[in-house]
Image (cartoon, rainbow, N blue to C red; front, top):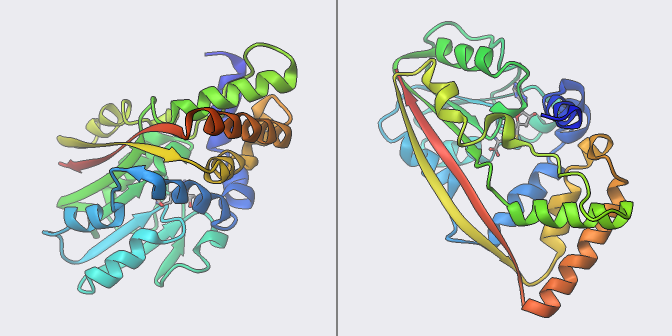
Length: 272
Ligand SMILES: C[S@@+](CC[C@H](N)C(=O)[O-])C[C@H]1O[C@@H](n2cnc3c(N)ncnc32)[C@H](O)[C@@H]1O
C-alpha cells in the first residue's frame, strides 16, 4: 500500500472529519443515497432490512444511523419495535426520529445482551478499529439476535473511479491522476465476512448488483462532490477535478447516450 493510500484510509475514519464535515449534516450522504434512484434493478434497502427483521421483536439499535432512513421506515412499518438511532455526529441526528443517542460504535453505552437486533449499515468502514467495533456490536446483541451490516464491493462504481482518475490526470497534466478516495475499501463486501466471522458463527452475504444509467450528469457530479470532506487527501485540486469530470461525463453522454455505473453492494446477516 502506498503512503497516500494509507493517508486516505486513515482520513476515512478520522472522527473530526466525519463529525465536523462529512456528516455534520446529511447533505453529502443524501447526494450518495440519491444516485440509486437511477439504478436498475432498484432495491428498497429499508424494505429489505425490515424484511430481515420479520422474526425480531424488542429493541433494535441502528448504529451509525446517519439521516435515519432506516429508523423512520422501521418506526412506520414495525411500530411494535423500539428503534434507537445512534451516531457519532450530533449534527446528522438532528432530524432523526427519537430516541437517538450520540455514541461511538467502538464504545456503545448499552448493557451486554440488551439489543434484539443491531444494524451497522454502510458505517463500519468509518470506525477507527473495525475489530473492536464488531466486538462491541456483538456484546450488546442478545444471544439469538441478529446483526445486519451492509457495505459496497471493491468493484462498486468503478466507472466513477476511472472517470475521477482521468479528470485528475487532465488537471495535473499527467496520463492518470491519483485514485479517488474510497470509503468502503477498509470494510468492503469482500472483507466483511472475515471481519464479522471472527465474532459470529453464521455470516450470510446477500449481494445486490445493479447498473445506474444516467442521461444527465448532475447526480454523478453531486456524488463526486460529496467527497469534499476528503478533498485534502485527493492529491489534486478537488473542485477543478469535479468540474473536469462533469465535462468528460457530459461528452460521454453526448456520444453514447448515457453514462453507465456498475454497482455492487450487499447486506451481511450475522448470528452467533
Ligand atoms: C455512510 S453513513 C450511513 C448512514 C446510514 N446507516 C445509511 O446506511 O444510510 C455513515 C454514518 O456512520 C456514522 N459513523 C461513522 N463512524 C461512527 C462511529 N464510530 N460510531 C457511530 N457512528 C459512526 C457517520 O456519522 C454517518 O452518519
